[in-house]
Image 1: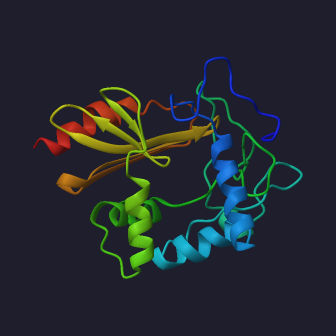
Image 2: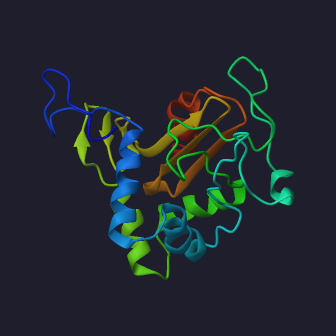
Amino acid sequence: MLNAWTPRDGEEPGKQRVYSHAGYVLLQLALERRYGIPIGQLIESRILTPLGMHSTLIPERGRDNRAIMPPELIQKTVQGYSDRGTPIGPPGNQQGYFDFPSTGQMFSSARDLVTLMAACIDGNLADPQLREALRITQREVFHVDQEFGQAMAWENVDLGDLDIIDKPGGLNNASAYVGLVPARKIGLLLLANRGEFSHEIGRYHILPALARQ
């Protein structure tokens, strides 16, 4: 699929921002080929374990589209719903855009995600390589317009008197938003077991209100 992809008329490398989830798959393939290790193991050994994120995992999908993980963890997962409030699969149902290994939903806890936010905000980590890697992911690599800049997954948002680094995401049964204001050491995490949850309330209302107090 990636080899068959071609730019549309008028698109040139480095000239426009085209958002695609396939970019993450391309990065996954590059990392797996470079290190000879599945992406799930790489993330666990290089990020999750050093940060102490022991409740975060990327399980494979079973034939019933349910995450393959121990029953005690399945019992802790929430029911997912569509944006209209309709249940989507049982708890542990794993949606995704691709069928490549490790491209389904990642399962985590609020505590683990707060740990990640803290590491991204203050960079107070013993591992210098991980500290630098987290810093690099926040650096703008493509200037979209006066308000937006694209970093590695993160989006840089310039609200005039406030700079936000954030990332909304989700699938049809769950949504998440992580927003950071590094200059004020403020972070915001929104989790919803519902698809298409609006992240704008965090970006344009809650974070600015917290930062300007």
